[in-house]
Image (cartoon, rainbow, N blue to C red):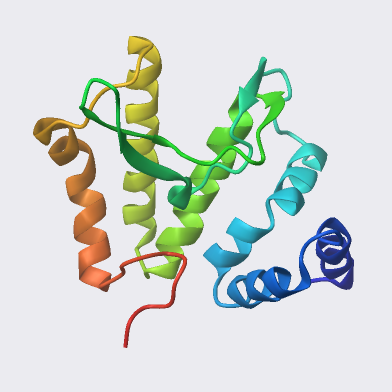
Length: 174
């Protein structure tokens, strides 16, 4: 990592509590996924500067920090369990495609962290894009049903189980 990136990270985090910041930096040093997770501002700064990236996507309110660990389940008022984005502290008005770019990047970085093959990584990315497209086509959130869970998650779970990975954020248990 260049000195510029280190200075940029330090400048971005100046107003943060020093104790919590030390914990954040320690986590960021553990692996590439943790670094990606903790450096959203670097990601977007470089994304804006990338040549060839379509900038014509419509503006939308995006999560801003969409990655694998910013999803979770919750029970709705109707008592059904939903699975959705659960972190909006980096939300911004930005091209709608940027959340997709960040999430797919997190899939690739996370897959590398569990030693998944390039083919597995491609399957994970394509599975996400298919599910995302289907959700947009229906225009509403769905509850988690046994069939939905099995259809979309079996391959991802098999990859994670084979590598005995429990979280991309924490080191693998010894």
